[in-house]
Image (cartoon, rainbow, N blue to C red):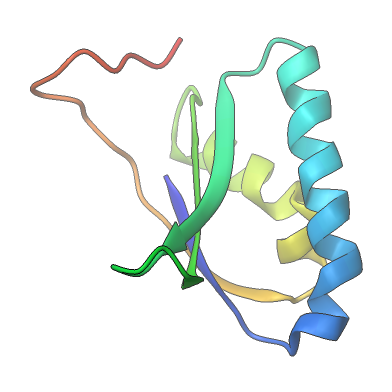
Length: 94
């Protein structure tokens, strides 16, 4: 799970955000189990940062993938990567 916050003004981030969307779509078309979106506040307004959930064989593989993200590669976000171990519920990463 990658969480992130913009570290640059939106006009600088905007073209890289579109590249990020295309990158995620390409990975999905290649069969990678990945989803990405933005967090919102109680009123549904964006600004809470982003969240990307994906399957990887291990932490190093996950980090390698994150480093390819156009938002990360272009220094647009401060980010954190954490593994996730599902314990209760029916969401499953392939």
